[in-house]
Length: 98
Image 1 (cartoon, helix red, strand yellow):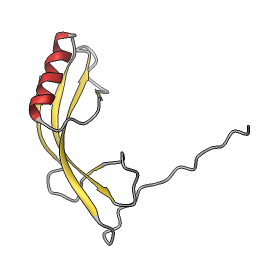
Image 2 (image 1 turned 135 degrees about the horizontal axis):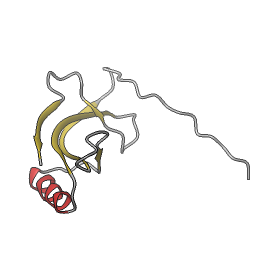
Image 3 (image 1 turned 90 degrees about the horizontal axis):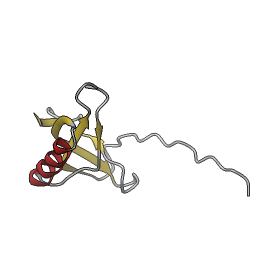
């Protein structure tokens, strides 16, 4: 079986295509002496879920930020591909440390 490389597809915004936006929460975290780079898991849909996840990470010794982010995707992009909506005046709507 030959090895195949999947070509990299650059996502470009096309204003004529239908697109949708969503607002989600990310819990970006790292160990206290290491401030950057922070890692985040999957997007969370509610603030309560993000706060519970941050509380669990804080008990494990992590610190970081809860970020409320506005994201967008286009109809012809893969289903799991969302990008930060920089067309809006505030793409990162809100941040708080934990």
